[in-house]
Length: 479
Image (cartoon, rainbow, N blue to C red; front, side, top):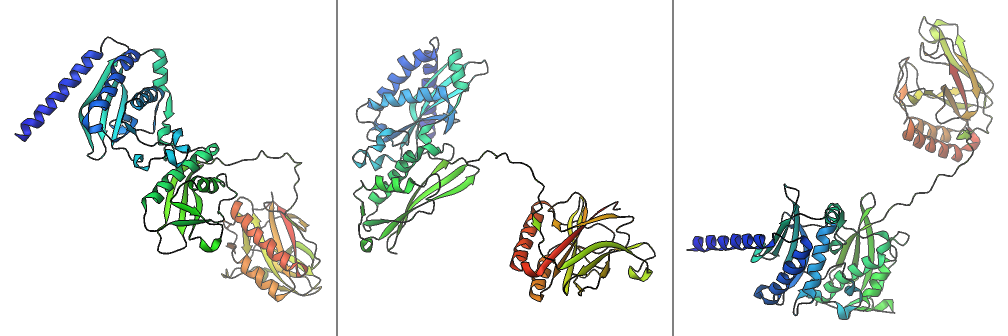
């Protein structure tokens, strides 16, 4: 019997759909909306017992689901249906963010309209023949089912104007504040009113205690929505469920706001009523908002190849490249080249190498120890420190006290510290560089990593400026 009734109901729905579709043929879309669709909706809402005293929401659907992003033609039809419903006595249209009436104060806010029991949806689809199919349905959000017998449909050709509207994508502002339809930066007042509506309704529903508000310093005072908390507070001041105290001693809660970045310029803004009393629950409301980043146009300035650092200390008297004549110096039968340094004071010296296309490394001897190699140079006694075998062949070199971040030639650096504490600070920092101890190039620091490392070196030099010095040697014909 139950199966028979279900089949009978299905047959009746199909029959009604066929009759509705047949009746729609031969009239254009605008005529059908004016003479068939809107009168049908008015009659159903006025006479159908399921809609009496219930909250309704008008939406655009796709595959039976409400859509935040749709097209201009569908939104025009939806708006006409909503206007028609507004003229039907006893009909309750659910609160929606695009409705300007919710900005008029609590006497115009009905928190019972926050959730819609029924969705009245219009759905438009293109047919295979290039025409348009329009369908109207009512959806019960509690039963998750279509309302039987509530349907109208139309199929036919549309004008070029209507086709352009159908192809014109548009955001449904009744979804404003949701992820697919965020508020814009210029709509801080609307965002605040939305949040105050949601938070105010939560305040009116709770019965545990009365919140006495003390506004806190908002973390986002310098952000694009810095005034949202103040605007929310001003809106909530009209709600009887919330009080404000001029005396901090009597306040039991604070209101706070925070914008969390979701993706690029999309933020999820939360406003929270935070109790100072642990017995009260926290209440919060949220909405999405777009906050485009501000970018400044680059200022045109004369280009100068100034090095990031310049040595003003005179610990290192000279740095040069020399050829060592003894074979034991480099433990190789090949030509042995070395960095020669002379100093005006006893100092500990570190050697670095900027390799073209490879980056900055620290130089070590053939032992390839993990820690930074330190060499000691004494006053007025030149010392030679061999370079890895075959590193240079017939190098042409020039010395300078300038430190360039990314030079255009292979460069060797000698950093001298005439203080033990300064030398330890340098050793720890230089140890972060990759080590090179052979003729084979070693990938070093480049780009951002090199800039960050150099920034740390600058800090150490500034800290120990009187007892740290450096010089550099640039070479050509490096193989």
